[in-house]
Image 1: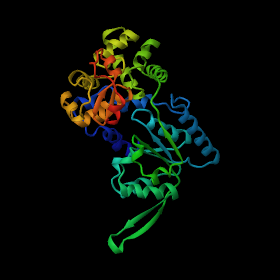
Image 2: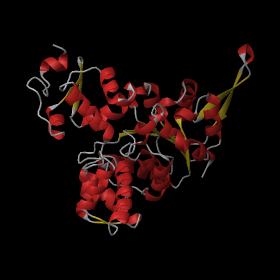
Image 3: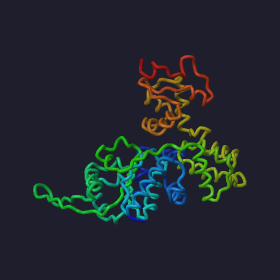
Image 4: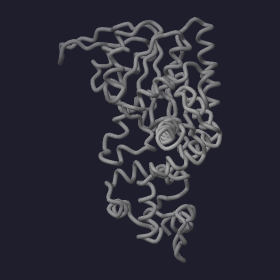
Length: 368
């Protein structure tokens, strides 16, 4: 392990959860990895593109890029991976290094606050080495500007001195491959995006793909699981392999303590009921938001601050932690007049909407 891994493994996770405290930061369905997840993921990560499950288009395109680079005897083009946490960006970066037969250096954007931090990392790279920069959109502006020249010309200018007497000393770098990962590609400036030779967006997984992930992980963890049990866990995993693996471990614990250690549909359902993850993947916080919206405010529209007070959480927690999944599932809508529950939300909670609630008409969506 290199020095970057020891300092920065936790930094990337902290970036997405830095404002969360208490129960909201410890959700079983959180896609950000904690210390336990990072330790287990190291053992479960696929080692090459052939083992990697899902992301078919990304795998096919990346395979062509890497094969062509090996055929030329050159380093691979710089790669930008975007997508939600837990979809496999770090895993793909390690696979890129393995496929190219190169070492990998791991760091993150928040850890690089000065141009000198980046210069120290770049100057220590070996020829052909892969530099994985997680949460690249959170890198400081001076370091970002230095990265432009490093990616394009494999050179950085180190400034010595201050004021009128400052001198720029050019430092040649060995050819390397930068793999950048971001959960918010829109925050990357165009000059930085344009310097990546290959850009890929990671999509959420289909349930069938998650079932394959769960069966593979169960085999590596020496857990016996039947197809119905894998289907039950996959359906509650929010399209995210990291969450699927976390739920698998919790169901395994339940099966070992409450049953004979074998995971089937009934065992998986009973275990996830204990952990308050319902059949659609909603947890306590998600349901609290929906119940407040539907029961207290008749389905809305209601302002975010009011909804957060009703739930007993911070405004940022509701907006950034609960709402994205609820919106993606079609259970909640953000409108100019406030948050509105959809007919699917009423049906999911088994509630009957009032006469004037539960629907999202054109007037609600456009403030008419």
